[in-house]
Length: 513
Image (cartoon, rainbow, N blue to C red):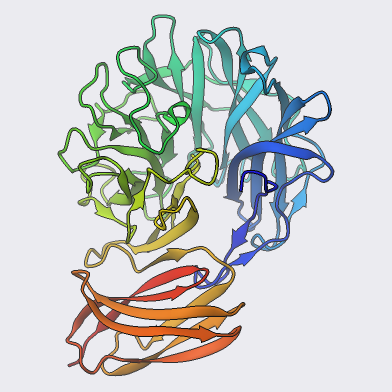
């Protein structure tokens, strides 16, 4: 509903994704007319406090003057309640009738927190871009850093410039802090000869200043180079086709500690290499002074299929995880899954790609109910020591509705691409099945906050439906549902609970027969 008020709901879990609740805090400024916004980012400090920044665009009537604001809030209780700063981190303005008439734009902020034992421990860094439009061909810009000291309530007034060179356009920054407290920034720059490239800059004094940036790699992407139109991704507005660069650092203390990793979307390096978009990867083992020749991570070997919007994470064991949207399963480049791979040797090799989404989304209809905006751009993968946890926007109902999905992928275990996957919803939760592995029978606990039709299905790994319990209509409450597998053979199965509010699929192992 395009006329519905915008909101910023925050879902949180305290049982590793078994159930979800919605915070009453939604980030909408009281008494202001919200016209847009987004870009939410959350980091956690050593005390377990959550720190969040986000962008809002508010309108003043009747002038229609629009103000952009980067805002900050923190939570001491795992996301249940939040304390918002009354002070904006930074502000800008935008002319909704003609963005080129805007005086100052601020955009695309990302956060990193210093988890080292340096003097900068728990300091938070926010990187973003300041854009001063001159014309469609020239938008003067600077990559900026603002910092919040560990014991301060707000970010610094003064911003520090990251890039020292002049560019026709700079954008799409990413940030990480290593175990020595060095701040690393990765960003895109376009020079006056229309050369598009990625650059790395670092600060060795806690973000007070940055050493001159060094070029990492060129890249070729439709819309950023004049030889290819940027309307090639069905379901993604041409203005939102971008390289989606991300950088992370290995802080595991292991053999690859301090290594930097970067990913992005492109269809070539210096020139167009394919009609389809791919996920590129490079690494640095010397603090960003040099970088390996980029390689393509998607292993479909299909030059026309599209892979885009990668996300990157390194867990505390040094496992490097990359996830992205992928269309290899559809020759028409429309049906879209969410894929993943990971590396346990510092990016020297990667596991075979696999889908973490259990159903594809038809991107012909993905933006039907949000004015063509589509899936958004801030999807991410995170991880614990044992699980990769990709989070993505999913439109598998193919009616224009978009849901937020999450998967828990057991690392080092390839028998099934995920241990559980499903909708993020506070209206229902599933516990069990118990026991698991199971030999004859067990119990699945279902908790409903509202009345719902409920269907339970069991599929084999090849997708065959082996059991289905017809829809029940349950009022709100707690239910223990028996599971009978006496007639099934040993193996790995997928147990799916479907409700009016979404679904949850879990791995069920049958053994002992």
